[in-house]
Image (tube, rainbow, N blue to C red; front, side, top):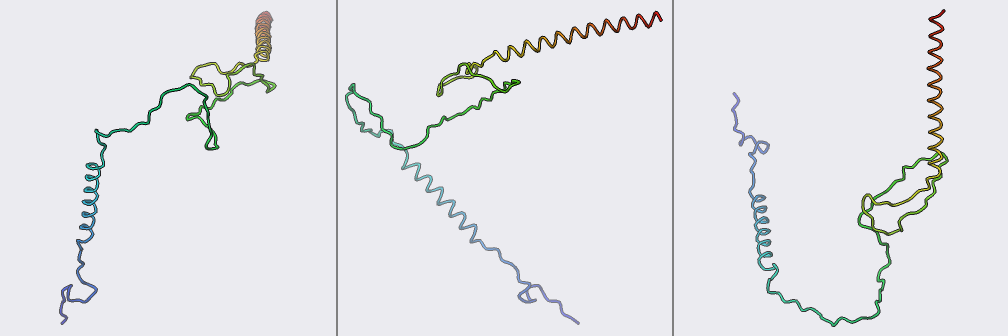
Length: 155
């Protein structure tokens, strides 16, 4: 007969695992030290209302303004808005008559640029002429259709 052995007596493979408490204790200690450090910082390093500012005062005088550049670099705006031209012309050339000067502060809806409208006006007249010719052809076609229907009915 074989004897049944308990799991602890079966050798090193079946030992019970022990869960340590060292890691939770270390974590709790770190959190406690951090909280204590935060409390001490806000208690002692806060701004004092009674702090005296020793300002350097000088009488205002009128004189020459000297501007010195200490660093080389590029000046850029904080917010850029990209404006795209959506003007289409048949020849691809659009002349600019006037525009606001570079660096001018503008608001939404302000007039920025004036384009040469001669090419557009000429193209508009050509389109109006083409529409008039098309309407004339429609009227002629309807008249021809009416005449053809009348001829058909007479036949």
